[in-house]
Image 1 (cartoon, one colour):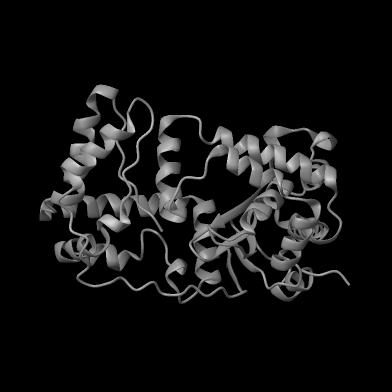
Image 2: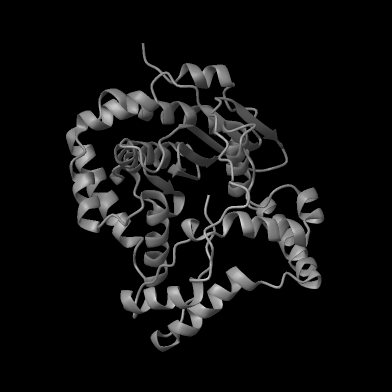
Length: 350
């Protein structure tokens, strides 16, 4: 939903960096030789993405979850579009999207706010907030469904299972983040065995259910995906799915106060660690202003996480998980993966 142009420089070079960024946005030449060169770069990037099975699975997951809507499309798009995109297409996109009301200039590190505002007025003040064609925001529709790309020549199956989540500004987002932390992540290099805090990590480690798993909570403007991605042996897929859904249902019915407190502390720690450095802080400022029209202070975010109770987690998980149609994407030797009807049946306890 967002694109970023950024520069990292010494404090004395900030004026030059802002000038260069402003020039890129406003005065790109878009010469045909440059377009052709970048066309080749993007096609090579597409090949790299197709060789990354996690990227492939998540592309399939979005394609089936939001089929027929903009979020179902990949970031790079189909090859035919890359091959035929023209200078006129790029110019139209810039005129439509690069408008002052849609742009945030953020900075972090050795820079004063007042000086950054002055630089913005100097180099971006000429932008006119006039839309020739108002971009239409097509609604995104979630559809419980599945995509399986079976390839028995592959040694491991890569699977993602998710349900519809909450948007950026939804009040349920924080409890879903806590629930996401409760499931956690694990891979074989971590070890830990029975000492893992997450039950799913303990089961995966002791019973060799998978090589790795990672819970995720992906948010967009008005929707999202909440689920898990895992890599497993073909013969362990059924048991892995069973244990995942068992943990999901426990979130809805019997998660304990101690588990929620541990997850809240871990979530706060992880969010602070993600802001370690000027680049992630700068990106966080821009993203939050676009999403919330302000930056949420760390102490406010801490208070929001701390206010989540056991009952909040149960209620929100019941709302989003219990008896909901999941979306499934799988690549590799998927014969052992339960069919969609069985996975759907595991989304409730009688």
